[in-house]
Image (tube, rainbow, N blue to C red; front, side, top):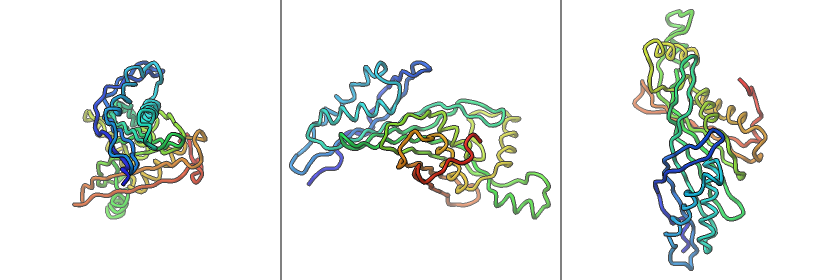
Length: 272
C-alpha cells in the first residue's frame, strides 16, 4: 500500500529573509513530507532535515517566504528520488500595519505559505489571517426603526477571524501587508492591541457606521483579493475568504466561506 505523506510536523526554525526593506527574521513552524510507493517500506526521514539546511544560505538567494518554501520543496524531491510528490507548509507571525481612521498600529497576523505537488506541477498557497470585529446590520436596523434613530443606531458586535487565501499553480509573491489591509477593510473594523479611551470611542462608533454580515465580509474580501492579484496570476487561480465569528448574543458561532477563480471574478471597485 502506498503512503501519501510521511515526514515531520512542527519543525521550529528561525528564518532570515532578505527583502527590499532590509533583513527580516521570522520564527516559523514547518511541516515537510513526501510520498512513498507501495513497494517501498519507508522513507529516509533525516533527508527532510537535510532539505531545510538551505535556510542557512537563503538570505542570499531569495527575498520571499514563498521562494523559500519552493526551494525546500525542490530539495525534498532531489533528496527523496524515490518520491513523486512532496509538501512544505510554513507557518509564522508577521506584524502588519492596521489603520482605521486616525488609529494606526502594528498588529500580529498569521501567515501560511505552502508548496505541494510533484517535480513538474506544483500548487502554491499563501494565506493570511487577521482579527477584527463586525457590527450586525440586522439588529442595528431593527433598533433604528423601533426607537426612531435618525443617526447611527447601536447594535451588537462580535470578534471575528478572517482568512484570505491565494491558491495558484504559479509562484506568486504578494505583500502580506497588502493582503492584511484588504482583509481588515472587509470587516467593520480591525482589532487593536492598545486603545486609549478616545480611540476606543472612535473605533466603536466608526465600526457602527460600517455594519457587516459574515457573508458581506467574505464577499468583500474576495473582491479585494481579486483587485490585488490583477492579471499577474493564471486564470484558474483560486481566491478564498473564510470567516469565523464569535457571536456575542448567541451560544453558537457563525462561519462563512466564499471563493472563486480569477477568470470568474471580474475586477470591481478596485482602488476603493
